[in-house]
Length: 365
Image (spheres, one colour):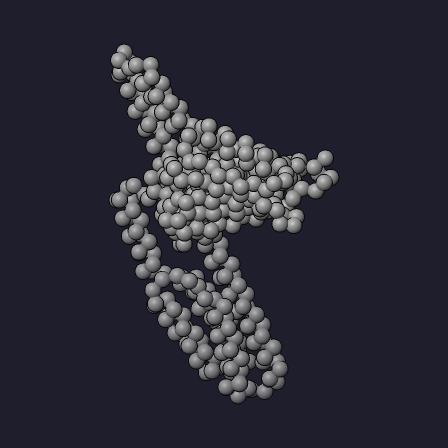
């Protein structure tokens, strides 16, 4: 739910940092902007020196506009607006050789349209570049986290298997059972991570097939907490459920997975004796489910990112996970036409609120 695992190889980090620094020195320094403004000034002086009906200088303004691609943050619309103002001004400074002003302005308007087209192309290209970088960062983060989590689990499996082999004749049945359980637990972590990754990739087209059965949220939450208490033997659950059945229209399997992800996050980031508070209420035609803990909490800088795929915040160091839990929860909730909100404070805990539309009577039959 929270922090990205840092790259373990300091040499690779150093090389990556130096490459990024060189890239910044070439594309992001002040001289690129200075060169653009100098070129704009030179084009304007050329425009003033020639007759206004000569619009070649106006078309030349597209060159500095395209040059803005080499800036750290391109400003093509600013340059296009400046070029438009200079193109119009240039038509009045040098006396015409006889052409009507309307004809001169008409020709310049064609050049101005070209300037704005160039600016829009630069804007689109920059957005594509940012999106490619974003996808590359998600993929890099995914590989880092997956390698770390699976590697940690495999280390546990290998270590326990080695001890079982080496000490097979000396282990008591209870000790043998403990080590076998550790192997099973580590293998279970790998299975959980791979299942989440497969599910996340299956959401790539933006659609989730959702059933249309009536699901009683109260019954589901009781069943889920009973199961987790039996399996985890950890945090107690405090249920404050609405007195009457609360039915929503949807897919029981997906909804259970969503609530299990949220509850398990609360368990992971809370101390063993800290209770997890789960409540349900009804507001008009909306069913509200709140899951709150008194755990580590989420830093403000991480709060807006925790629902991004493969993102883990600064508070998750030492806790296993692939950074997919809340991403999957949000997608499932959205598929059920619901909303999710997260409130958190470091050291005081986190509260996740999910609102789902209530099922109609026709659906509940």
